[in-house]
Image (cartoon, rainbow, N blue to C red):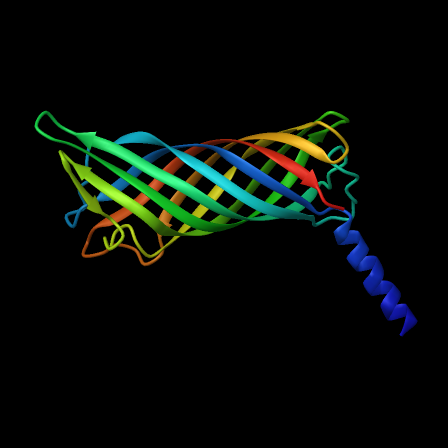
Length: 213
């Protein structure tokens, strides 16, 4: 019994030692990949900017304990709640239109440290998330339409994501981060009435990391 308690204590202490919280914000540059029921894409669509926010939590996955922002474990798991805008614009000589959407997501990433010293850390990470439409508008000319009931935009989207990160250590417990990522969001149920929609996003983000234990 004593041995079991000791094992549990060591296990819990190991994972508590590297836990941290993070907050990221930044910019999404999104391209809409839309095909109609005949499989034809809209050549008039152009990418547009949107905001990005994520708050989350991380734990180490290897046997190297974290000693604050200056001593990250080599391998860690990050989970977070995100809010992403995927916007696009388009049109022709006679008409202009644009989409403004906001998606709520739950994300999970594995991050690996490739370079670190006392003041600086560089890493790569990859993972996926699940997102659903929170709000959205389609503007055509002078008219605005709500996208919340539009079948192509609603439902559950899966969004693989990968990229690189840098962390500048401000103190033992606090770090400032920056990242550059690529992401694709695809509707899990596929095409609706022959029409398909996905988002290709380039993301630039900045954030704060706070060591908890």
